[in-house]
Length: 591
Image 1 (cartoon, rainbow, N blue to C red):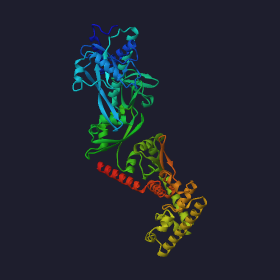
Image 2 (cartoon, rainbow, N blue to C red; image 1 turned 60 degrees about the vertical axis):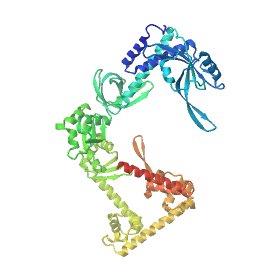
Image 3 (spheres, rainbow, N blue to C red; image 1 turned 30 degrees about the vertical axis):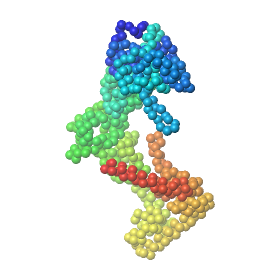
Image 4 (cartoon, helix red, strand yellow; image 1 turned 90 degrees about the horizontal axis):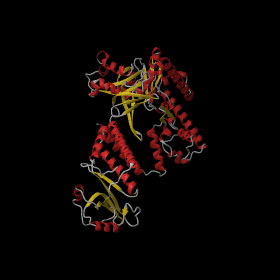
């Protein structure tokens, strides 16, 4: 097949037809044709040659050119695609090349001045120049001889393509068109992730549903389908675009009907106030196909967020329920106060008492005995959804269980005061009833706080504090002796901020020198929480029993590092100042 035929315009017509069918840029198809023709020409002239093809966008004429790059004598490797400066100069003079076309920019580094300068890469045309060549040559020095990096361009005759070459060219064009089509599909759908799309079921493969979504196909995986749903070809389906990924086999569009965001987008479609931003969806928790909870807040005091989402006679929420195959939905007013929000989230169960532990992100909920099963829900569904909605781990107990626990704590603290202070049970119970939980509180509290207890005079209060201090001092002495027996060095004993009991705990954990202490992490001392397989796991700290916070642990560790010379105090002050400045900027931006 000859490239130079009377039907050269067929190339352009074919490119336009393919581009229109695949909905891609015709320029991409023409570039694919140029590359395929160049590859076919290399099989004729030699794979080492740099053969390039240019198709005229108006006439369809294909021009075959050979390009040789000017290189240094030492760096010359491919004699078919490169040439020396001297050879280029002789060739240019022999061909009387006087047209220079800029083809790029090269950067030359000068080792003496340690600077680099940019020069235009020039092309010396050994063929008849075109109008485009002359336009590119404007403003470029025409008299400078060829230099390293320049190119010499010579026209070569078109090639006759046989059956094998034509088939190879066809494969190149198809591959390029396929890549362009994939890129177009990815660019179209990447910005639509997080939105709802309507499609038509094409087929089902191993439980996964293939959905036609217009200019592409999406995959609704088995675990993203609502349990009771089944689909047949040509069924219409509404899905949430969960993710769009660029993969080797093309862009993959993953759909979902179980994602909490799917419900949020459905409410946005059904409730105009959500679409307009008057009502905001703060959190969604779902047990797909069974039950869901959604927390909403209104920024307009005159609009009830729950009523707006329910709609007249439940029309709005019912439309969402129908789309989700009858999934029951609890619409809950959102509240900034976490305990209040949790009480709302546990509806319809009634809550008697809430105890929040912000550090552990756990919350204890006390409910009446008859409300326990309702609060937990069938198979723990209600409390599980409330936990997902609030982001807290929830412990539910009845009023009877909570009363038993309080009584056990009361008895434990009473016995502790009886044994350590050598007082009778009645006096110890009075201390616990007034809120005293430890010997430190009794020993170092203001005496006036003890005098408010019925039956306590100054002598009694002073005697109690004396006994408490003596007991604490004895505990400290024994702990220090134990720490020395375990091998704790004086450098750590003399370190300010650690009590003898802390030293004993550190020694039992293998921390016996100031260097050992300086290598500890803050969470190793104060404890913390980590997430493993989606569940929060408690990490016990060595000093956690002494109520050492993470910030206090960080300060102790940094002080130890400064003391042994690992950290420069000036750098520490500078880092602290930068952190304070960043925090101030963040507060200003939020304000």
